[in-house]
Length: 427
Image 1 (cartoon, rainbow, N blue to C red):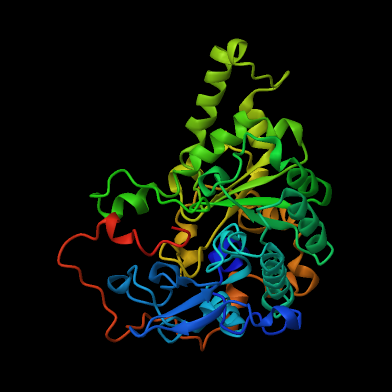
Image 2 (tube, rainbow, N blue to C red):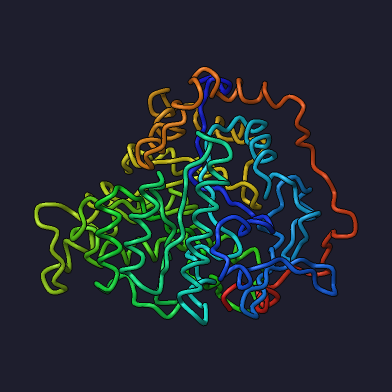
């Protein structure tokens, strides 16, 4: 397929929330309690909520910066590319990348809304979470109709409230919710516990996809405190194998056959062996472990109910016949350090050279549209939604790397994982 003829919808990007996001979405009695951005004596800007401070980690917002300036230090909004947090500039950056649609995960509240779950008063926490969802749906996504797939936060401390919120935002057109890959790590029941059944049931009822993003358990993937950060970055996507195993053996999928769960930013190269392994385990051990998939194999259930996602995964695409091509979606990861922006179409095309147009269309946009109840063509003609058409609209957008003066990190030795210990949200 010609690169300019591709249509790209990403099911994993990120929004760095703007400081004024709560201004229009809270009842008066809660406004004084809202999270706010403060500037530290060091010059760094952080979100402050109930005495907790959550920094904007540098790796969360490095789009447009030279790779040698990637880092883990907190940053200010002035040091970020405006497309990280301003809707008009985000659309410009999407167009410059030839990208039609995007689903944006949260930043400062953390991937499963953990920050609000720690609220001293859960009534206040729920008000903040609903305000966040309202802002995300009506202002962020609503600010550019047809360009975003809405994604909600769950009130993770109460599965009945989670179910209510899933149903509430579904009426607003939101059919995706971000959840934890391992809630037990945050002090909640595990994925093996029926505690979450009201939530699963609500998602099934209204066609809401549960998105489990890497890192959504609020825990770093570390092998040693002495390991360089390269180890952590290498293992992050593959770590979702743990969530995949939990889901397969938890009984959640057979109990809720209409439920769809996306393994966000998890890659796909590891999945063929995982599917082989779970079938092998089942055939050898189910008689004494008590697992029962009836006439199906665990891999059948996985292929049917799990949405798999990739940024740039040539090995995984070469083995795609082991996966369900109808549940395979592409990701951009803007503005994070793994993102292929602003060259996503060109990078992706190198992995698609032996794949037919029908398969390419599925993984680049058709699957995402169907799975997430998203119809961009209701707002924009298809012929104006291609890589070539969008890039033509953004001919004046500067995507050249820009140095952030005075913020270049040049460590004298490899950055160690232990250096992250005091800046990880939730820890």
